[in-house]
Image (cartoon, rainbow, N blue to C red; front, side, top):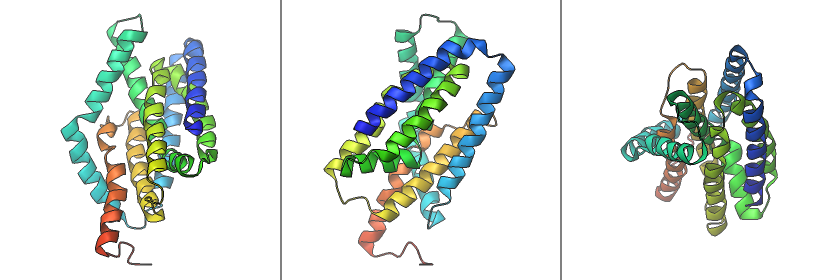
Amino acid sequence: MIGTIINVITVFIGGTLGTLLGHRFPARMQETILASLGLFTLIIAIDSALVSGNVLIVLGSLLIGALIGEALHIERRLEDFGGWLRDKLVRERDGSEGARFVEGFVTASLIFCVGPLTIQGSIEDGLMGDYTKLAIKAMMDGFAALAFATTLGPGVIASVIVILLFQGGISLLAGLSSNVFTEPMIMELTATGGVVLMAVGIRLLDLKKIRAANLLPAIFVAPAAVAVMDALGINYYPNL
């Protein structure tokens, strides 16, 4: 949990600084910053997605995960939670400001909680007490939070709640289920997470508002699929 706590602190500091400094940046500069973050998110996402040893596992996981996410209305629930936080934390209630808070909360929560460092770092922190990867991620997230908050406002700060629950939850589960996650499971989980992160990048570039949060179950379906195939003796990496 140490790595998660460090991550929460850096995002809180970065988000706070970005919120305080955001009004100093003209609208065109904020748009360019957001586009830059979208492009960088796509690069990280593609790099993660390419680690898969069998793209059919990723495809199947995404399809099943999408069905689960849509059935559970995860994105809507996350937006509702963001709206509830906005009502508790933000005094301004005009429509544009409220929508901006929710967008900042949802976008930051997805970016900070979906990716290879999130999963691998949390597992290593829980299994071995090694929080090196999460410490690296914390530094990156701190600067990203600063940049995001200049354009999306205080909703970015509120994402620390999701980071604490999601990353911390993975670390706790990993500690309770040592030796369960195999290297192929982590590999396919990372690749599937990369595709989900790609949806976030497309959203940041304002190309299409994909309900990325509804794809989140896919990152849990992927390792489960590998585990099932292992149990059935199926060779899921035929070229190896």
